[in-house]
Length: 237
Length: 237
Image 1 (tube, rainbow over the protein chains, first blue to last red):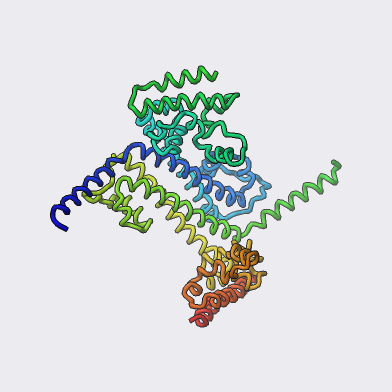
Image 2: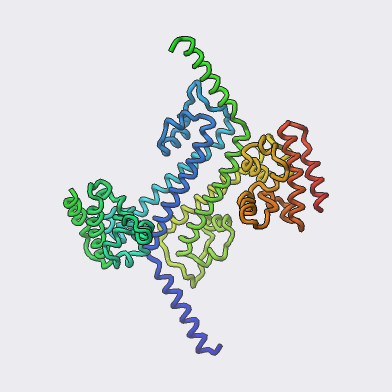
């Protein structure tokens, strides 16, 4: 290589690296966090299924009585899991029991990691897209960004697309087989949609406001999220 | 209900509960543990995938350089993950970095739980079926019991079935479509099969000895596992 080309090459390389470096933003953290939270849920479920199956060899009546996973784990770890006198569960050595309770420890830890990541996500969302967060809520807002790919793409979608994000499967089924068209995607989890009688209408209204909120966020407009959310609640009352 | 029936009912109930209670054995713990270990592997992989993807926003060169998951986690947690000067990774705040390192903490914990459960499994296997363990090894032995359902069913299988346990998919494909018949199931992981030139012959020999070992274990015979293993090694030399 001659010197000129070498200079050009190394300068080009340096600039590209710099650009990659600068392309990382808080939005990336939002995507990582919301996906990680979904994975933590999966992990928690794997651990709880194993914990209950194994524990029920020892004290099935107690496991059936305490349905709530987090409470079940808490009570076991505190040792507040007395056996009934005529329990069907086997007598199990303390050291074998310890092996079972090890799973409860892990489940508890994963549960607390989830809580901490939820708080982190809330902080990120309020910084990056306060309006979207106010209208859609932290989790749905983050899932929408994740489904769209990034905030910019979400901003460019018409609100009818926003309404159906997360319902791609049902949408393609509709297009292919003529099955009923979906009325809402991930936003069916929104409390104002979930509690509405006419869910199609509610989903449309929520998607409209989300669409607007995302545009304000993307162009770094003022915070009008509180106002938007109130209007929405009025409309869907 | 008249009194006689009531007495009969409660006695019957009591006896049934007692029988259920007594049906739990160390074999159940083996099944729980080997299945749990498989789940811990899945969890570890989920965590590592997320950790690497997220961490690579910050220091991709380091992540690419350290391929071994356990070592990667160790170095990150020790803070021995220096960045190259011209790294493509973004500058990330300490508090955002902490959120990433939280994942490494979990991965490390799951890894150590796996180790501890492997040791527990070894202890159980040596107690319940020392001969099988000596011939097949801890993990393969436990997987064979799990595939058969319990030790008794494994004992009743002919050795040609033992040879194919874990290859059911390939076997049914063979029966349905006439594809090549499988020569070995889970025992292809056995070191004496893995290193053999003629894997079919080795699998047959290993399955024969396993079949014998399980029978001795089931009927609580003497420990001849060491002898069986040695014979096998001689034969397959």
